[in-house]
Length: 226
Image 1 (cartoon, rainbow, N blue to C red):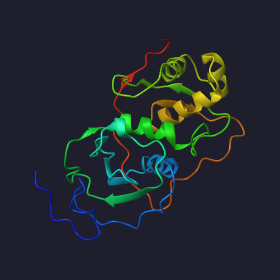
Image 2 (spheres, one colour; image 1 turned 30 degrees about the vertical axis):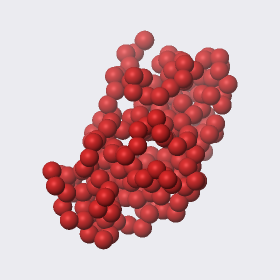
Image 3 (cartoon, rainbow, N blue to C red; image 1 turned 180 degrees about the vertical axis):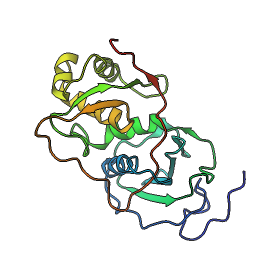
């Protein structure tokens, strides 16, 4: 498929995007925190949009949340845990417009990596103290780079609704190891979340960041009582 002519306000011709006007991107910031918050906010708004993330020195990651796919010139094994900055772009499109050009990969593993590294050992910006979590569907660990401890956290999160602190206690792991996994699973939309009493307010989506809510997130659903 040949990409249409890309106007000056759209991504550069070398980027794997269809055409479309572009609002000014949010300011660049160190690390993945702003990107994770942006993606989470974008997922809440049902308007078709392509997203670009440009970590310094690693080209552009093109994301289509409609199809839950991304295109990147680098392998996921080259993912930079703490880039100097990440420039974010959003590109409005029509709902049936062509999406990404190039080799498309499933988005889950990329969101996993972003979520793990976005906030260090701190809670993700959209999560609230006292909330309880339980796994909704089982991630494909054949595709996700992970440690045995991270897999153990995911397995433990199947058992029941738990706060992060309780999950760390049941998993017998430090909270600093558990919280990044919860951040990543939440960004992947793999968690059921029940708000805790007296929790801090939910953060609204980032200003000037809009895109599509996917119809579903790929993954194997967890059986109840498992």
